Amino acid sequence: MEAITETMSQEQPYEKFMRFGAEALTEAELLAVILRTGTRNCSALELAEKVLSLARGREKGLNALHHIPLRELLKIPGIGEVKAVKLKSLAELSKRMAKEQAASTLSFDSPDTVARYFMEELRHEEREKVLLLSLDSRLNLLEKDVLSIGTVNYSLLSAREIFVLAFQNKASSVMLLHNHPSGDATPSRQDVCITEKIKEAGELLGIPLTDHIVIGSNAYTSFKKCGLL
Image 1 (cartoon, rainbow, N blue to C red):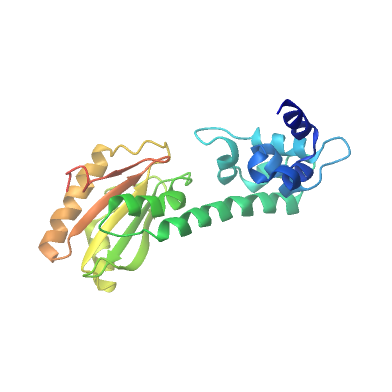
Image 2: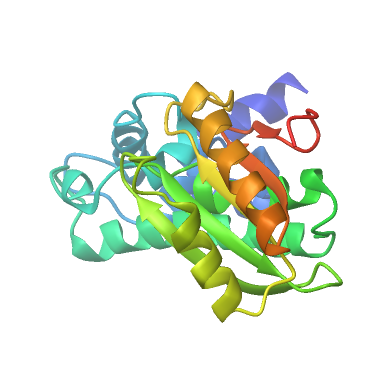
């Protein structure tokens, strides 16, 4: 066993992949396979380690690729436009694969499945993003609208705007989702207040608010599940 471990540690990432499979590679080695080449003074593995060293904030390891801007990657000697685009494309692929997997169990009367489906779309956002989901009488998705991006001014996130869209989409009910860039999925006082106002407006208009889900970093809070609706 020790001999195998020593052999694995001495091999280049590509050769190590071919002999032992992808699961035997570290995150840096996996990135090195994607990067393929380094520079005269820096191997592909060392280049990958430099990329991972840019991780900061709440996201570590490969997840940091979602947050590292293209311009930051291009500052690393040996990372040109082609390599930088490959790395950002890798991050986007991982997001889409996670969403596709979650789609197989998506049900809009189950907060768990809704949160899982929208988790990858929202949890990597650097700014708050508010989504309105318009649903038909069978809780099928009719339309997804982006209500706001950036620091949410709740005085501008009006019930009127929400239900104008709901009527345009011929919705029987609506659902709200938004992310907290801090990673904490705990609803704020403003979240609670605006949810109550939208709930009351929906009851008057006959288009009920079925849930408001706050997305954090691999965590979420459902107003419905918590008994806040």
